Image 1 (cartoon, rainbow, N blue to C red):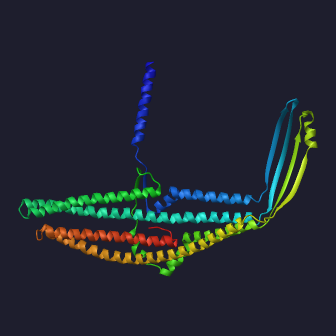
Image 2 (image 1 turned 135 degrees about the horizontal axis):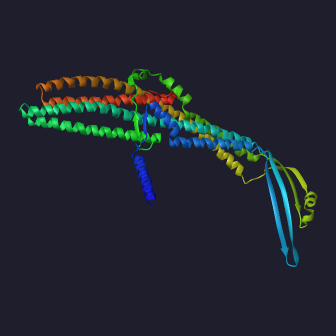
Amino acid sequence: MKKVILGFIAALACTVEETGAAQEAPAAAYHFTLEDCLSYARDNNYNLQSLKLSEDAREDAYRQSKKERLPNLNASLNENLNSSKGNSASLNGNYGLNAALALYQGGNISNAIEQNKLRMEQAYYQTSQYENTLTIQILQTFLTALGNEELLNYQKAVLKSSEEQWKQGSKQFQAGQILESDYLLLEAQYANDKNTIVNTQLSRDNSLLSLKGLLSISPENNLQIIYPDTTALSEMSILPSLNEVLSGTFYSLPDLKISQYSIDIAKVGLKMSKSSYLPTISLQGSIATGHSTDYSRFGAQLSDRLNEQIGISLNIPIYDNSRTKSKAAQSSIALQQAELDKKQTELEIRQTVSSEYQEVVAAYNKYRTTNIRQNAYSKTFDVYRAQFQVGSITAVDLLQQQNNYISALNDYLQSKYEFILKRKILDVYRGVQIKM
């Protein structure tokens, strides 16, 4: 008994240790470039997977519609027990096979096959449409996180400088070289710079959290983005003409293809609604047999009662309370609506792309301007910092230049990543592979 108890305690200890180890196991870590994010999202985004299931459903509907050309076959079996007052109970049964084949339904089967084929193909472009939307969302969150990360690096350098200035100011104040107000300004600036870093970290983490959602990654998992090579900004500045962008957009953007499929589907729907005016022809056949109470002659009864039937039926519509006419009118309206929707889509795309193109040009010009400005303020700030160290300027002068530099730096980073984002969105419209 003692050995059993000791064994139980040892097993329990192992179980607790394993459980604790499992609880302390680090969350999964992801180290992704922009291309990795886009690739991972294509395979794991829940909304995208749902659309792909819709594609499978449309494909199954298309396969099923083709099978409607085949005959159907049904079997029936009935066994009955009959009993009445004054008569003995009797058993009888009937067995049969029935088949039917539609020879002509006004082209309805062919039209249904064509319509389901169009819907299947349209579903593919609807998935592609969402992929473009998802790509743009990933671009936005990835570049926002990237911009905050770069800004954070600059802010840490500024914080280090603020700390040195604050420490130096403390010595100068104790030595009576600066006023207390100057020292307090340096201390306030140092505290403000620390708070700014916290806010930037929070913004970066929120962007990463949004990115995890787009990738369908659990929030507790660690996601680190790999800094891309942004030296290709000069290449991004080489823009194709607006006509080239519009031509590429109209060729590759799935939105227009979806609109055209809606028109084609509506055309087939109009044919199907008009098919009710036409006659239908079907072929039917059956084979049946049965038996009565006498089971001693069961096989002979089945043979004697065997009957076969085959026939053709013709159904000619004459008057259906104008239901077919109304249905055809509604289908015609649906077709006109689909054609108008396509024209509206074309107009909106043309306007959107033209506007985005101009915004790319403006964003690039702003990026160049802010780059020059932040370089100038950076050098000016270095000069003022050196002057403050030797006591030739006040803390007010130093902090004013520091704030000017930080403001210029924020504008530069914001314009830099805004230009990259808008430039890449143009590539999404044109169907160009997104990479950095």
